[in-house]
Image 1 (cartoon, rainbow, N blue to C red):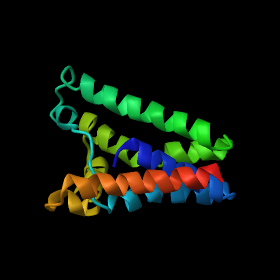
Image 2 (image 1 turned 180 degrees about the vertical axis):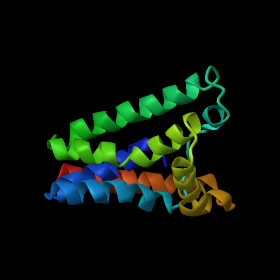
Image 3 (image 1 turned 60 degrees about the vertical axis):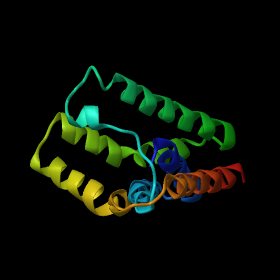
Image 4 (image 1 turned 90 degrees about the horizontal axis):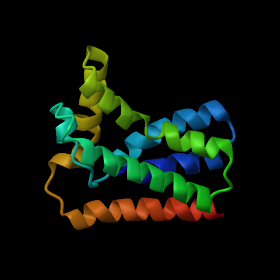
Length: 149
């Protein structure tokens, strides 16, 4: 999923759960929950292939998505610190994937395998982009509605 969806669900967890350690764990696990559904993602092939100069447009998309996520959270939430902590923790698994590309090791390779091959089950199935986008629109919409309450 794009970072926006992960960040908003993490923000919802931070908003709903008052227990800080529990909120952090649940925000982290929510990332994997969202990745179970069919979705579209950025192309990070240039990063994976270590073509750093060609990856600048990819990194710009990720950065803009991150800023959009923070902006929406700022506009629709009560701006409590735990909301932002939840949003940031929810994108850690994707950060771990990027780290595994830059600094390969056995632990990161194991995480990357589980995250990209097992949890992203529908990534390898033939599903139209309509359904892949719809799951993200629904999750973002629900999260915004919850944060507006």
